[in-house]
Amino acid sequence: MYPDDLFREFDRMFAELSLPLTSHARRGSFNPNADVYVTDGGSLIVVAVELAGVERDNIKLVVEGRTLYLAGVRQSFAHGCVDVLQKEIERGYFFKKIQLPTAVAVAHARAEYQGGMLTVKLPVASRSSVLPVNRTEIRMVVRGRS
Image (cartoon, rainbow, N blue to C red; front, side, top):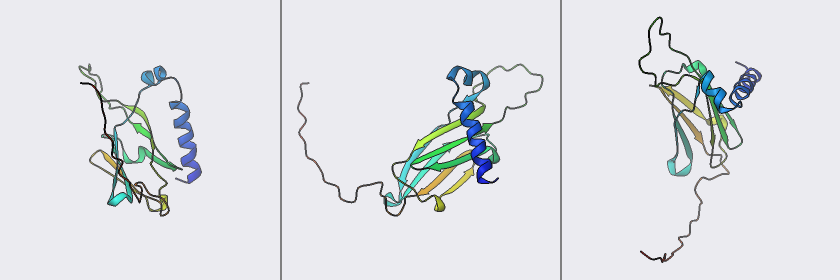
């Protein structure tokens, strides 16, 4: 897929997802759970997203500035002619916008999808830092009534 095709696909997904929430629920959409943390002494941002049942080709990632966009679709399961007794697994389109704490080196970013978990590793840009280089402890006394 060429970059222009990828951006067109994102535009289409964003247009659908920008409709009111009630129309999402009828058509099917969900917001996947994500953890974002910093490792390697502040030089790597790791984003872990729960996407069980999503095909790898249905996942799109874009970094724009200090924002990571994740979009895609979890296909409906073909139940055939059965009556559903319980339905908790959300299906349809998903979209996640994650604000990053600093600029990242997109050229060195890596993503891995295994066991229903998407792990995105984003190295912090060389001139940026997630954690301040010099920290100063501020000592405070908090007073109040019990």
